[in-house]
Amino acid sequence: MNSPDIQVISPDQFDRDTAQTPGSERYAAISPSLGIFSALWGGLFEVRPGAKTGIHHHGEQETIAYVLSGVCEIRWGERGQFSARAKAGDFIRVPPYLLHMEINASQTEPFRWVVVRSTATPIVVNLPEDTWP
Image (cartoon, rainbow, N blue to C red; front, side, top):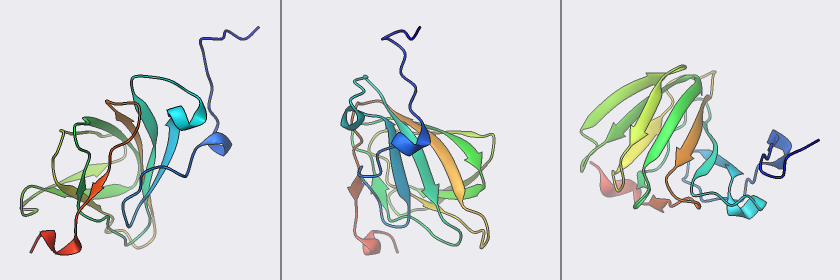
């Protein structure tokens, strides 16, 4: 017997019509758009081989991500002056309003993250490409 309190969301149910940043794809799994009402948003994030995202931030949202596969360089700061690498098995925390971008240096493997955000719907503020030198 299934409990009405537990919901299982399979990949074929993910919502691909969610806030996006150029160079990446986000897939909502826990979202009001799927009829799932939670204080948090959850989904998958992928950057294909050799791609990078646009510079963006997530407004008031705090983001926690777990790297499922691949390696990612993350740049952040007012001018993109800071960087770190995250690989499969790592967790990442992105504070609210922090300008950042993700870069996939691999020419053969995408990187994929499980993402949880601190509000029910995603906030994505994309900035112009020339924001950083």
